[in-house]
Image (cartoon, rainbow, N blue to C red; front, side, top):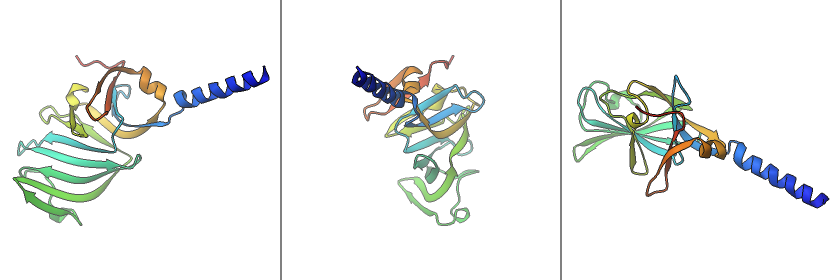
Length: 183
């Protein structure tokens, strides 16, 4: 009897740890004004944020890496210069080259533990992970200010809050929270 109680207590403690302690690291993108509107990516160690430049109308691709805490912007690709495009002279240590009509600038800029991005009206902001592209306007209204950060969440939060998910061919999982629907 005593042994059964001990096993039951250990089992319940293990269940508690697995389901309720924040052990699962995700890339979280949330609405700055309403954090309950968010999407999670399970494989967010490297990703690309792309957008259409407002002046030159070409697509820009910003490449990010994360160690689970800090984000580093390490490469930018673009097809044409315009206002706000990176200049090699303004970025110490950067390597700049052109190939097949694409300009590439490689550098290392520590962005910090989180960063903000506003969903553009015309920019068509997207995030690509493992070759799968997701347009942010499919999850958030244009002009929404978004917070990108790495977050540890309990498996139960990840599982219960899911109303819609897509499983890509590489095994990435993206979800939308229950209380957020795009009209």
